[in-house]
Amino acid sequence: MKMKLSCLPVSLFGEINTGKMPIEEYFALAEEIGLDGIDISMNFLHCHSAVYVREMRERFEKQKLPVIMCATYPDFTNPDPMQREREVAYFNADIALCDALHIPYLRILAGQAHPGVDPEQGIAWAVECMKRCAAFAEKTGVTLVYEDHGKPGAWDYIDMTYPPELFLKTVEGIRDTSIGINFDIGNIVAAGEDPVKIVKMILPKIKTIHVSDMEAFGTFKPVLVGTGATPLKEVFHALKEGGFDGWYCIEEASNTGFDGIRKAVANTRRIWEEA
Image (cartoon, rainbow, N blue to C red):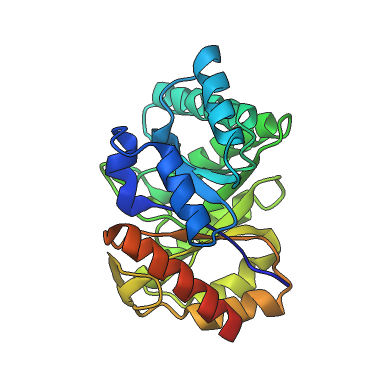
């Protein structure tokens, strides 16, 4: 079994989002350090117009590495019913964009922990919206993957399903859908839970892995992959033992630039080989 490895360059988001760093520069770096693919944020893409989409598809097709996953930020737990309708429409447009750009995986989230919203109600809203989006995704070449998520810069509040027990309730709600799971190892550690235990509970639904590392259990502080408290070797072993053969996607958020991405790739491959 060969490890398929891609990387979401969170440390470079500011430069790529603003256009200071062309996406082709990241493709070149990824190829240089031996990645098998790259991941992007929806924030890298600026509109859905036909000309823009064609130009981006041509730019991607000129590269040797494929784009594997796109990270996006739907907020299906918003207490405003009209905003939830907008969020479904926005996300379906993101599905269409990924399909047009031949990106096989699109991350889907539950939404923010809005003040005053009961988690049970929020999860019910999220599951209903996710199911609606899955129905559309099934008409395309895009697979949705739900993540145990923390807090992106695009949001005001932490993910409502950040606590592992709420994440698992949401997984149960989408169990009979086509939605898979993008399991973020570091986020579970930051929430104070054993990722090996969680992996074994949800392994059949896992399609992709976010390889991330946290400074300490119970603390959301990303560090260079392979240098923190996250038991990556043990999780990789459990995945291998369970027959997982999907993509491992490094979420590089240590804010150490190109050097950090290089080290994260080397550390991930070494730990996976040792597992």
